[in-house]
Image (cartoon, rainbow, N blue to C red; front, top):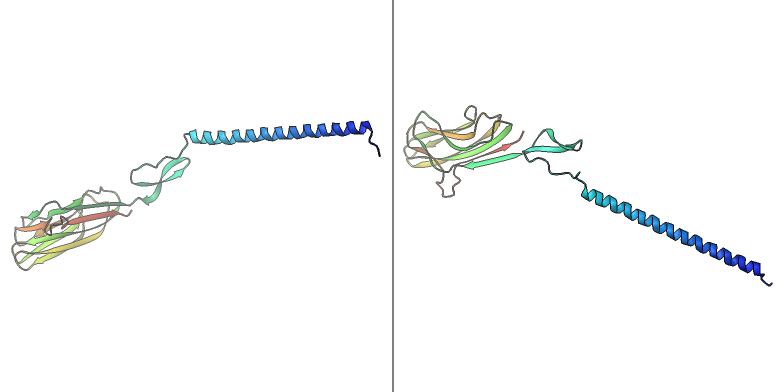
Length: 203
């Protein structure tokens, strides 16, 4: 059947309309894509340039958590603290009535501490008893004795225990109750670690 001129013109018009519609869809898609890129890019750059980054918590021995956009101390929790010290030179036990401090640490007066240590003692004269105690200058945490049966003999006294709110430095002090020539040794072995004290804060 022959196609009329009006049918041909109508088909052309429909094609043009369809092409225009396609161009509009493509333009809208491109515009939306550009807007999306701008939105994403702005978000990224704004975030990157923001001053609301979470910085490090204060470095003061406490445990911190985030609360209301700020760092806050977590109550009831203590960051563990460890201290240790060794005797740097011999200590003469030259008075029968007095205790002489050996290794010691300065831990402050706050918290509960587990403290442990040892001293190497030498008795040039014998027989002798060398008494030792682990304390804070007021409260005795632990005590012990080294018996010197032969002149020139030596031994090691180990002491440990807990203390809360120590009044002063934690230390091991010793006393020779028989002679005034006893010694707390610092380097009898040549390793410079012959009399040592360590403490660990637990609360």
